[in-house]
Figure 1: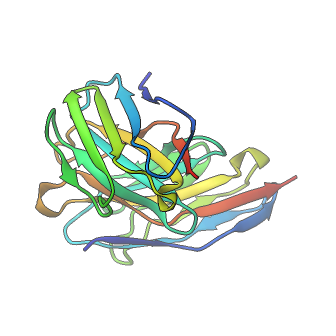
Figure 2: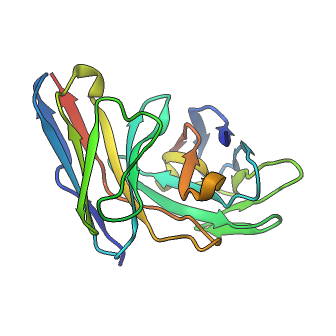
Length: 114
Length: 115
């Protein structure tokens, strides 16, 4: 079945450092790809998405590009802030059998120190 | 503003109790989902529903059941709570994707402890 693999954490960075969180996927068909963020004590919220190959999703300084040739959707930010400390989940739409489920990676915890 | 609410943020129950977790969405979404979140395991789908009175098993349905009598409400039921059901439970909803996007909206979560 479809699956998502994202880099294991935790990741600890200093403020203003460059962030990359790797995400690769296995899927049949052409899934949509997502990054969700979960701040401490909260539910998940959508950070960005891309629905087809070569699309770039962006939000709050974060970016990710849908790379079909490498089956990847890596999350990047040029300069992280303390407020970016959270758990980040990569996900894809499971399109088998007309399902509308999402398949999530295991999450990567990011801590940004002042 | 889209809203998914869950009945409790924190819940403590005893082993063997029947537990109800309630989720309500105000977006008129057809699809609703229940996940549990555990450290190192990410989110795992318990049950989902495409419509009122419709339900389908997810990846880990054992020990759980669900009810969807109204479009806006999706309940997760632990018939006889056990300590291995101590977890964070997340509810989500989405509208039919129409081949474009499957974005799900999440509630704040219920942290359940079974003692």
